[in-house]
Length: 212
Image 1 (tube, rainbow, N blue to C red):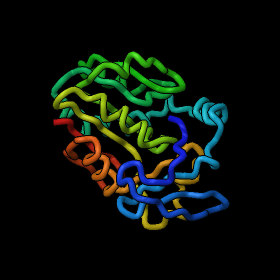
Image 2: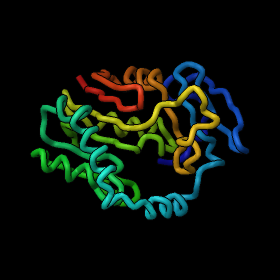
Image 3: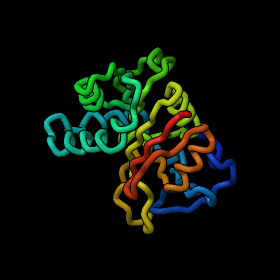
C-alpha cells in the first residue's frame, strides 16, 4: 500500500483537482468523486501501526454485531463458493472467525498483521474488506490486488463510508490513517475498470461486487 506519486485518478485516469483543508492537501477526481490525501500528509508506517495497535475491539459486542450484520446483508446471500479471504483482517481476525462458523474455509491477509503474500496468489469465492479501502495509500495498486482475488462468480464485499455533502467537517476524514475516500460513482468506476458487477449497496458505504 505505497503512496502514489501521480495526481491522476487511478480509476478514471483524469487529472484531479487539489484543495487544502486544515493545512492538508487532498486531490479530488472531477469524474468519479474519489478524494485522496496527498502523500505528504500520510503517517509513517510505524505511526500507522501504532494507531492500529491501540484499537480495542476484541470485547466490543457492538463491533461484532456490526460485522455480523454486514456479512448477513452484503456477503453471505451472494457467496456460492465457500472459500474466503478477509483482506485487511487487522489484529483480531473477527471476520474470518465469523465466516468459519458459516462453513467457509477462510484465509487472512493484512500488510501489518498477516502479510502472507501466498494467500494473495489464490482465488476465493468471497473476499471481504471491512473498514480497509479508506486506508489505501495507492488505491490503484491495492484495488488491482483486491479485484484479482475472486474466482469466477466470486464476490467482493466492501465496507467503508461514502463522502458526505460536507467533506470539510466530516469526522471520518479526520482519522489520520484514512487517506482515500469514495462515492457511489467511484464504486461504479472501480467496477468498470476491473471487470466487476455491483450486485447491491447502500447509502452508507457498503458495496457487493461480483466477478462474472
